[in-house]
Picture 1 (cartoon, rainbow, N blue to C red):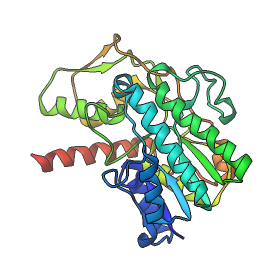
Picture 2 (cartoon, rainbow, N blue to C red):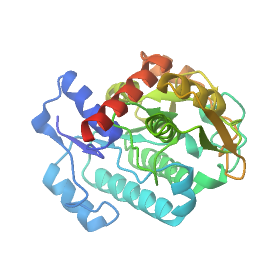
Picture 3 (cartoon, rainbow, N blue to C red):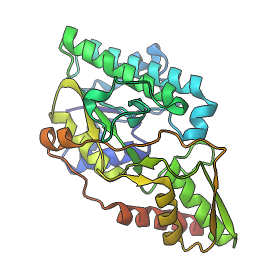
Length: 311
């Protein structure tokens, strides 16, 4: 069984590789393309990739992603790159008669004011939150493509929709990080620099749901042999937490004694996020193993140890 794992060197992809090997897939049969060798936004490069890898299974994780700031700054790039990568990989998968296609989508595809918890069938009940709509719509459109290919070509696929992921090795870049690494970095730096206050975006009222990257990777590997009719399936932790509560939790774990200042001139993003996970439990037999507080402590410890090693 040969597997093409796009994005295999990334945050989620590296964990998926680990679980594939633990589940008995041979590492020599797992092909991880590098962006310097294959530009998936170009069909010619993608065609060559399939010639070089000859996959039976494709797991498509490659994406251009970021937090609210990056989404606001690069909306055109986020739409075009994610749309083109997905279309090229899906079409070349079809032409090469692969056995199964696993697509990882995004919670950003849901409507801005979706009823809570989010049900997969509510995907088309409204437009996504504006700051991440280009990314979310591109991923949603790829789901339409996969369903169309299933109906016309019997192209077998599954689409996983994870909530916000976190964990060690997350992206801590100031320009593109998501909320958990951004807050961890702020509070760790504040402790190291003896700051009296930390500024956070928005008013803290927005809610999010967070899933440890290892739990998400398990679900991706399980999906290889489950559900092949282009279904959307939520991956969530089933607990909602406000950004204000999250900031206080990270503040306490980091040992910061100062004040949190909320900058309400900055956007909150989508008001609420919480996924219904009934389908994934029933169809994949999956549920998360890692408690949120424990995973948060591990992530903070990983980041602080990394900083100590770099000094």
